[in-house]
Amino acid sequence: MTIAGATTADLMAAVASGETTAVEVAQAFLDRIEAHDGSIDAFLHVSKENALAQAAEVDTKRRSGQPLGKLAGLPIAIKDNLCTKGEPTTCSSRMLEKFVSPYDATVIERLRAADAVLIGRTNLDEFAMGSSTENSAFKTTRNPWNVAHAPGGSSGGSAAAVAAGMAPLALGSDTGGSIRQPAGFCGVVGLKPTYGRVSRYGLVAFASSLDQIGPMANDVHGAALLLEAIAGGDPLDSTCLPEAVPSYTSTLEEPIAGLRIGVVRSHYGEGLDAEVNAALQRAIEQYEDMGATIVDVEMPHQQYSVATYYVIAPCEASSNLARYDGIHYGYRAPQFDDMIDLYARSRGEAFGAEVKRRIMLGTFALSAGYADQYYNKALKVRRLIRRDFDKAFEQCDVILTPIAPTPAFKIGEMADDPLAMYLSDIFTIGANLAGVPGISLPAGFSSSGLPIGMQLLAPALQEERLLRVARMFERATDWHTRRPQLST
Image (cartoon, rainbow, N blue to C red; front, side, top):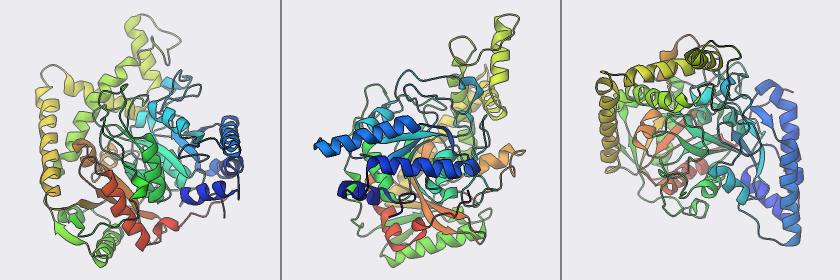
């Protein structure tokens, strides 16, 4: 077994059987990072000593017969907007460049309790605002399948790390597609859970009514296993649902009889790349061959999802990022004249262009005389979008859509066109506005060798169904088994 690129199930079996140890697994991934991350730039910080110490503790527990957590010895990459005690949590921003978290996010606590090995922290668009990981203040992450192309964003570092075999699992956050879109671009599995399924405590906030933490993995089983470990109620997050967490992995191999897959025909029209369309049509046919019924569903308000999102998300960002004022913590301008100048200089020097753009959009939309015209109206449209999903799920079990209009675009291709970048999220934003779960999984490749992802959406709290339907497709295809060839 080659450790790098192995699935979580293979790694767990190898460690359990004594074929290898948790330390050897951690060292293999650390070596992989050292060999290849110079060309990918997925990681901002690699926790070599801590990772090896955590792995050694797992091996000691195993030898002594102590109970082990469900992620025992599995290395996991962490998006750098999740607070981890004693480690930098920068959000890829100059504003938090020197911030070291004094506490663990709830998901980090749960990973530790599950005996996971936290291998490092991954790059992202600054404060998770972007779709390409080009907005990081520190580096530009590249797509392992073709380093001239973007890995997607904002969880591009996590997606690239998994795709490049530098970690079998990773955590990302998804506000408008930031787990699913990079997963699709990098040919891995990425799942955005139901809003409230996973605690947001310790996630640096972007848009609080949209943000959700979720797993990324090189197969569906890995995503299911990681979701089991991090999901569940949390008194530290009032929006976190106190629902019991199913054993997603125990039902994963059970196909769904009488499966009804909803298709929104308008998603497959003008603006969708021909190769993406062809791959999705083959996926639909594959499900039909497995006995699924394809149902046409209408979602008339989805056309307003991008406009709705880019009112709500910047408004919430404007409010959340007001705390970075140069006084409490974070970057402070070295020279200033008075209090107002301190605010202006600190924020002006430390925030990047995209963050500034969204703060200004949100501040304007919330300003006196405009809140009803923009923010409150967007909330009403959001309700209509949620109603579209409710009605569609009365007719089908899951909805199958593209992840993005095209495969991964070239780095710099959309840098000067923010609107085009925003429109690349057109298929993923709706799930965040409605709060429903969605998963991205590999569905093919373009003629130039870039991955093509597909998205499945399910009703709220139906992650178990979503994972089972995704696994049905994965069993019938081999797209998820393919790995990029990396140069050192």
